[in-house]
Image (cartoon, rainbow, N blue to C red):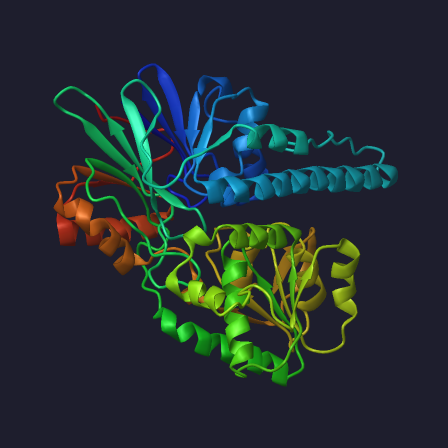
Length: 472
């Protein structure tokens, strides 16, 4: 069994790992790379192997940096099964179509802009931009999904099988245990996927496998410690009150899956308790609306807190001050509202979607604020907002940043260093042979590697893209 690291090696996005075993090529995730636009387009379009050479995919969860390049794989000739939990399958039905829609609209916008430039500059000769993939590609991809529940052993080859464990990251997220029958020397390889935080609302806590020989482990926050999650409602209350008192609007870029539902639940609870003023709250994301419907359809993934809401016959994702915005014209109409409000919109890293229009409209007014609630990859607009650039590019136009920018790490769906070590402990104590750290910027991976060495003395490797290892 040969393991090759293709994506999320030395970076956080574009999760893609390759297993070659028994004459078959099996992929763990196939995510979009996010970062500088030109580099992202190149890396997402140019897969590091012939797509038709892959026979199967095992998907950890639905986030676009883990699932979003599956349609490119299918467009290139892949036709095998894609294994995922039922909730991940349902989320991907919405997310991959939404991603394809964005690809098509982005290409349309760029081609129109090039055509306008050609009219004023006859020497300008641009090549037509094609979408990375289309809605048709996304539909063909969804047809390949095969639902597999947690802890359900499933064969991949004659000797290799897998089962999944709840990763506690988003609805349906999984850590994958792969078991290779190898005579008297079987091999157990665990792919962590993205590891969630204990105590987060809505979904259950992470449930790690007990034993492994090798582990591919995420390290997004490998060198950081989050503030206690119980403080998050106090901070959210402070932010909402502060912005409302000065007559401003609060723009919240949020991942449509996971983060939006967390925020809606918390704002619901704060509203019921009378802790925040009675502001209109808009969820302005068709994808988030569709994802929320998927959340409602999978109560088997809920934790005890949200089950209490259901027992009290309360819809945790609906209340009086909340409105879901689906139509584009209604979204544009939010710009005409003269009084304070909160708008939650995708995408979470501010790289696409309706949040860009709200940011362009509002960040130059110092009464307004932006609330960042999740990880922001290098070179994304979200990272530039966090770094307080005086001007940020939105749709190619420099826009003055005068709005206040808040950061709320406590809502992160990624475990911090302490939580990662706690998740790792059972496997480390059971005789783990080697850990491969991925899905982290170099400083974060190196900090986690040092912490693992100090606590468990387990060998750690931080692979680079293209590096291979023989595991059996």
